[in-house]
Image (tube, rainbow, N blue to C red; front, side, top):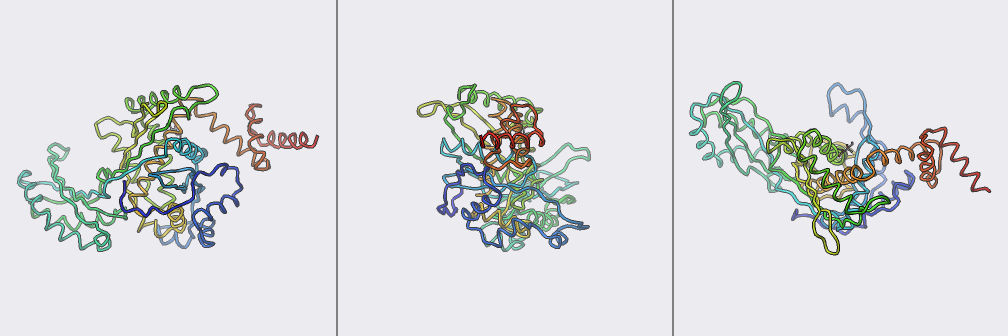
Length: 440
Ligand code: MEV
């Protein structure tokens, strides 16, 4: 667990019926919960301006908007979180909020992280004596630190800097042997891509003279396995009981589903996609590089040579009853300073709602979100199947689009599903029917 957190008191994030509120009511709830200013609320509505976009990328034409919602009910390391998520896929936010609600029955999530150490790689070719080169590089760590640390005063001030050097030899590549130097840089609250790329470029000439080789690539590795985050939860199985199944049956189904994804890459890809359904939207909402996270997660999932599930689920003995225990671990190279986190006005508000004190705290929360998203998918797959939930949500959207007031949306959706016709015209008829019934 991160030690330098500011564990401020916050109201509960357990928001019952949040999804039934109007957009205006939800904004008011979020504003009160996270103490948002009028300017913050305006930023949520307006997002990035075209002028800002023009400064961010080349050849800018305009903006591409995504819905931003709040994942509710999260309790991580005893702290309440509302989680801003930018995502186009319906049901992701509802599903993760539901899983976070279930996890509260077991005290929420416990999460932790390693120090935020990024890896920069320098590729060295034509090294005459790889063994002697490795010794020379390892002996030069202080010299390398003296070169690299002054490049990043803000990282140094925050307590980061070069933490180590590693040398790997790749004896057999299509172009012959090569020596790879890893620079391990603690980036503190920055994601650190620029810092680590600069470090690799500045270190390359010294590495060439130490090894007698020719430096080519100088770039970070997105397999940031020195910057891991993990989360666990332990939930009494009775929480999973439904109309048709005992809680223990559902829990065993979740364990069986996880075993499938552990053993089969075809299933693991979908399983891990479901995890990233939760993690990517938080990365996008906070202005983090979600492609870097995707690359790191999938490479880490294949670290033993087979692509596997990033999670582990098992049934364990609990207090009064068995419990479902889940764990996730993955690289999560995220920052809360610099880059788009600083430039994007919505990312600033998202970070304010999260109230995280460090990049490590953000990564821990994101690990918990990934575990929750996976739990919601496996729970549905192990019980009623994924489509029922999707249909329920779709029917609710159709009901609202047909003009059903929020308080009738569930009822209209239920009738649409019972009819087997989820169409706007039918929804409008049902709304009229309900009004007539209420008048009688
Ligand atoms: C859909 O976006 C994600 C799921 O396919 C994940 C899974 O199968 O575990 C439901």
